[in-house]
Amino acid sequence: MAGDGGALKDINEIKCQFRTREGFYKLLTLSDSQQRGGLSRGPSASSTVGPGAGPANSSPAGFLPPVRVSMVKLQPEDPSEESERVCFNIGRELYFYTLFCYCAVDLSKPIDKRIYKGTQPTCHDFNQYSATADSVALIVGFSAGQVQYLDPIKKETSKLFNEERLIDKTKVTCLKWLPKSENLFLASHASGHLYLYNVEHPCGTTAPQYSLLRQGEGFTVYACKTKTPRNPLLRWAVGEGGLNEFSFSPDGVHVACVGQDGCLRVFHFDSMELQGIMKSYFGGLLCVSWSPDGKYLATGGEDDLVTVWSFTESRVVARGHGHKSWVNVVAFDPFTTSIEEEEPMELSGSEEDLHQGALNFSRVRTSSTLSRLSRHSSKGGAPSVSYRFGSVGQDTQFCLWDLTDDILYPRLPLSRALTNTFSPNAPPSVSGGMNMTLPLPLPRSLSRSNSLPHPAVANATKSQGVTESGGTVGSNSAGGSTPFSIGRFATLSLQERKSDKSGTGGEKEHKRYHSLGNISKSNDKINVAPRSNRLDASKVLGTTLCPRMNEVPLLEPLVCKKIAHERLTVLVFMDDCIITACQEGLICTWARPGKHPSQPLSTQNGNSPSGTVV
Image 1 (tube, one colour):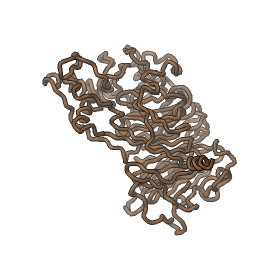
Image 2 (cartoon, one colour):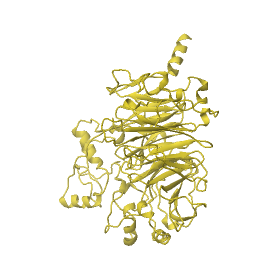
Image 3 (tube, helix red, strand yellow):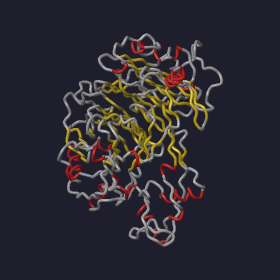
Image 4 (cartoon, helix red, strand yellow):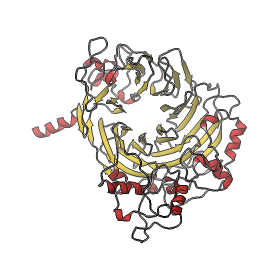
């Protein structure tokens, strides 16, 4: 019995370090003053929130919005000045601090502190693109549906959107500034809607009226009917149920959304075309993250799994099982992800074949799978790609995962290398002269079973009558036509918007029905139902949209540690540390191997180090 008790104690023990192939990650050991808001350890911890003597909050921790952390790097004139700022919410309070070495803060000196009545902050985001030493734009979403724009440095700059809740009455679940934009941001709500805002435009005193702009399988886009500029510019209705999170791709071209219907949907943002879809194994999806190169997405949700989906190949690459409850946050670690530089494709065949192949595949975003196979063989099978990502969940567990070549690109014998990859008519042949078909993933432009025209050449395909393109996302072809642009949308009149919408109405749809995981373009049905039907889970299971558990590799976590007493809600990877936070309001810093300070940290007032402990 004593042995059983010892084992149980070990399972419930909070870990303060863990080991990977790089070395030991260690929790920075700090004093009690490090605890966010001086929270007491124990059941009463949720009764007081925020640094200092904040107002009591009688709501149980389970009903409080998740703790979120946002960071921004400023541009001070003096390089010796601290350049990073951090914002976090706890209960009804919002805090803004200077970030010191190893993500420590002096809790006695907030730059700004706000306490809200009648609503609670649920999410926030800094505008890194426009941030300077004297000004930084911050948007904050609330549980009652409002969105606030403020500058914590200037403090006098503040605007409130959806103040009367005429746009949406449900809570804001996620906020993001559009990449490289000073004025545009996107907000998702529990209603399942996405709204595009411009901080320079008002919201109006009446409920907005909308006109149908785009429609596809599982989504509809509406434009706001107005004679003068007002918010929102656009409203997206995505899937069934609430939207939980969205994320822009590293190049800013695509946006990925996850929601309560269990679907991951990826859109080309400017042209508003659906590019890919995946279904969870069970329940809703709660979080999503792009790999640093934009080729893969990791999701987590109510099926207790992390799922890796290939955007370039439109397939589930792997699932990871290590959590015992819902996965709240998933994030790639760009500082330990290793991606080998692409090498020239290794091909054989006539010059004519190669020239034809260049025409057909010049815009394919990923290199040939064959070149990867040849690299495996020439390097003795050593992995050339290794993605590291992490996840935290309701079970208080922190997991790290490694995604390597043996999972991404199953190896085939060198004798099966194709001699003429790009011949458009002839089947692939083996070097021995026998024709055969290999189970290699096709480039994304050809593996799309719905034969969607490329978003960037949608206008060109209308005039040429073609239904399939092999271009990269965001590229212009067929006479240099340009896609519909969100940036241009704000200046269009209502008549121009209608003409742009009606121009796609007569295009004929072309489909291939070899997979239920396909997305069909349905602009020819633009005036039909505003929302699509819910996917039938029983029919989807076992397809490329949602493979069975035994049909894809199952990853085991590299690290799986209990690091908190309450559910975890934050995971941020930085160059010298990892940041986690739990619903109790404790934000922790984990020093990377070789980055742990040799001397104890000290606060600016000399009393104790800055930070938090569990």
